[in-house]
Every structure is written in structure tokens, then in C-alpha cells.
Length: 217
Image (cartoon, rainbow, N blue to C red; front, side):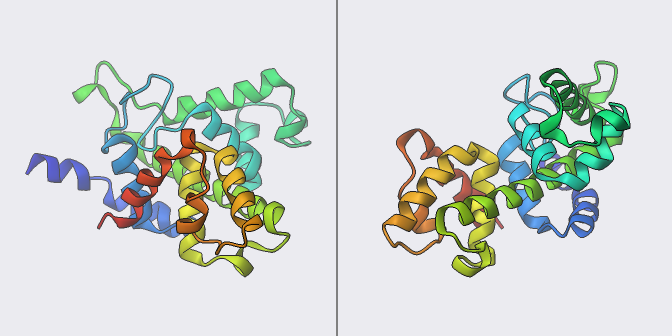
């Protein structure tokens, strides 16, 4: 009973964020189950944060590929003058400052709290994952276009594009780009089944990851 309660205690916040971002709520919840088993504190690695275990690379994707989020978040950390030219134009130190601030906002570790975590700000953690997934969507759309010369929706379906997005979240664009280019060159259907068949060996762990997220109830 306690496990069931813990796994479902964030449902309201997940639904609120899903409605605000137009993300599939069940996809978000399934991702949290895979990444952290709904434990928002330090789970596997000390440098992965929140329910979605956002990494430094994930923060980089969010700030680069989700301009609306960047425009809201950057002035909270840096001056408007620094922020105005965009994430890519920031120097390395300021980019690192932004990524660190993101990590801090998702960090719920609290030594003096019950269970050692503070759940009062859990919506921030959920929102960051949703916004990162939207950034991954944008990145996937660019990868598809680079590989095929076509808009993503012209060569793949809504459901398949979400699978690519999940993969991008987990292993990054390098794995996905190679598989996309190879699949398109082989004139294969641009769906997850065919594209994932062209993943290189170091990237193949993402196949199980995607399967678990899209097949979970």
C-alpha cells in the first residue's frame, strides 16, 4: 500500500504540468518510473537531479533547444544584457552557471526533512523534465530534417516521434543522429523499430528504455 501511495502521490502535479506543456501525462509518469522510481532525491548518481534525473547534458539541451524556457530562466540568474543574445552566445562560465542553477532548482535533498527530501517544490522538478522533453522534441525535429531533408511530421508519426524524443532524452543526439542517417540511407521506414535497428552497440541500451516507457500502463 505504501509503495502504491508513493508512486501515485505526484499524479496531480504531473497532470498540471502535462496540461500546461501539452505533454502526455502518462509518458511523463512512465519516464519518472524508469529514471528514479519516483524518488526525487539522489538516486543512482549524485549529479543527476529530480524525478527525471536531469543531467548536465539535459540542462544544456533544455537551455539550447527551448528558447521560451531560456528567456524566462536566464534573467533569474544572469543580467538581461547577458541573456539577450541567447544561450549559445554566453561564455562557458555563464553557461555553466545556468546549468548549475537548473540543477539546484531540481534538487530536493533536505537532511532535516522527512525521508531526507523536501517535496514542497516537486512541481519544479516535474516541470523541468517536461520542458526538457519539449527541448528534445525540437532537437529530434532538427535531426530528422538533417537526415531526410523533410519536416519530421512528413516522414514519421506522432507516436514514433515521441519514441525518438524519449531516446534523445536518455542517450542524446549522437546515437539518434547516426541511426537516423543510416536508416534513411537504407530507405527504411522512419519509425522506432527500423531506426533503432541502426543504433551502434554503445547506444543499444536505449531500446529497452524506450520499450519500458511506451509499454508501461
